[in-house]
Amino acid sequence: MNTIQIKPNAIKKIKLSLFVLFTGILLTACGRKRPEPESPYVPENFLAESERLSFDRSLLNAIPNNPFPTLSVPTYITKVEDTYFIVDCYNNQVIYHDNLTDPLYEWLVMTGDISMGHTLASDGFVYLIDDTEKNRILVMEKEINAGGHPVFVPTQEFNGIGNRPHYIVYDKYTDTFYAWRLCRNISR
Image (tube, rainbow, N blue to C red):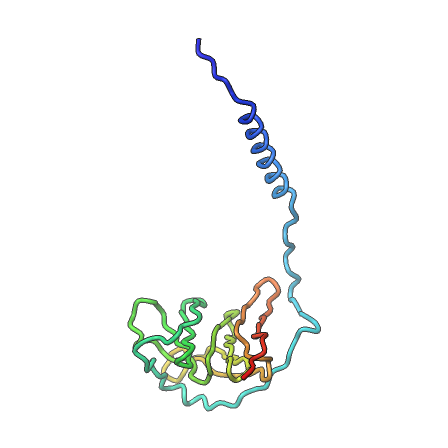
């Protein structure tokens, strides 16, 4: 009859492993779940009023195609509903298209009225773009032009948003947009 000998160190390791495993299970099983958000969520004392933009909507009857053969420092790509967006930082534009496989010249320009943008965030109704060098957040809304094509209309802007806003996110849980800005001193 063969017998198996287990070394005392191995028994200690098995006990420690079982302890860690059961502790992990206990902590995750007993953890508090995040409650559902209040409906509708109103983030009091965190709301900021923006400036309404006047814009000639007839300019959107002919949507411009992307004029650049390559991207120049694409800083963000995202998909909102059925549309892909690329923030093309050094070309100072945001472009959009319904797929990622078509060539860049088939993409449409959402806006070219930004300077060194970095991100785009959306809740599906409004689209916020950081306009880094102009220290503002540009707000756009989706509409249908005279030709029946989806276009994006600049409707609002948040000026003086701080020193070079670089990142915007939308938090669905709180139904709130958050913008981060660059925090550094530049000496010349």
